[in-house]
Amino acid sequence: MTIRFAERLNRLGTESAFEVLAHARLLEAEGRSIVHLEIGEPDFATPDNIIDAAVRAMRDGATHYTAASGIREVREKTAAYVTRHTGVPTQFENIVLTPGSKNLLLFALLALVEEEDEVIVPDPGYPIYRSLVEFIGAKAVSLPLRQENDFRADVDELARLITPRTRMLVVNSPQNPTGGILTRADCEAIARLAIDHDLIVLSDEIYNRLSYDGAHVSLYGIDGMAERTIYMDGLSKAWAMCGWRLGFGAMPVAIARKMDTLMINSSSCAAAFTQWAAVEAFDSPESDAAVDRMVAEFSHRRDRIVELLNEIPGFKCRRPAGAFYVFPDISATGFGDRELASSLLDEVGVAVLPGRSFGPVGEGHIRLSYAASIANLEEAARRIAQYVGAAVPG
Image (cartoon, rainbow, N blue to C red; front, side):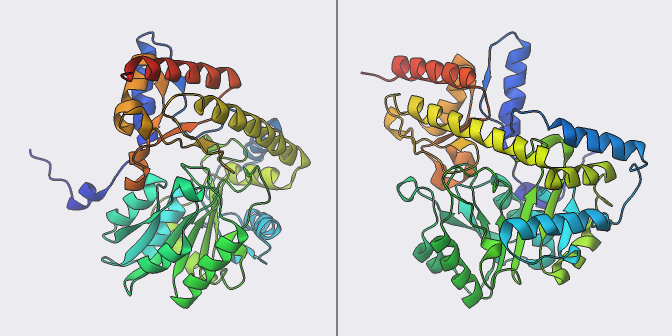
């Protein structure tokens, strides 16, 4: 039998971090020493009090189906958390809980974007934005984020990209892969454009608690934006819960109802005990203290890796303001970003990602995650410097 796959699968991309991780694991199985800087996952354990809350919930019977959008009490706690951190009065009806935040992106596109519509996505940006936009048959339009502008959007350039076909704008701050953060002035200018052109905005703020040089500004919280914005967040980054798979979104009630229908037709619901773990994450002083400790450690690591990378000939690395990534320009080394990323893994055992995998504007950069110990960051920088110094002519 010849299996014929649907044409739409040809439009579906991937997330290169998982591909590089798989290759790195194979090399480790062969006995190679690998420094993992490829995957976007905190290296901290989930706080004990959150684990204990999930176990209690399971023992108390939280092992069954819930309402598709989530348990009402958990949605109420989530709404209160969103209100505290964005300033937008949010009710449980605005909240949808999903098994991972990627579902929120997919559901937003399925509910609001038609084939041939245009969706503006950050470039470089999280690869799944472009992948899912193109998967549903829409057109992904790149919004360049450049190093000379601290990887912030140029609002005038954004205005020129908007056409009558533009339906949605995807914004990510703090940003993957660059660590860039939008200022309040940036957010206010983007809001004016969205309102003037009647755009839906998906504001991916999953790294919002990982901001180092000032308070995070929520685009969802700018005046006039709550009625047209899907706020996307989750437990993975701030509380080191990537494997727990719980995303949450805040949005207009009409959109939330459509997402509820999509949940019924896809995942049914997020795990009940994970939802109750979220309440512990949102409300306990222990959880806040754990986030603060992690942010302080990430800030220390950030400063160290930036210092080390800027000592490597041909590297130029900006100091990121959020998330846990650096995105150095390596074009002066003479290597292409794909070539260098591949060689660093195969030759010296340092797993990083090529900038081009995050969009065309990312060419000439590599992404390194500093969700790794200082010792591992220093070892990675030593290996990179040794390889680049030995391999570049002159």
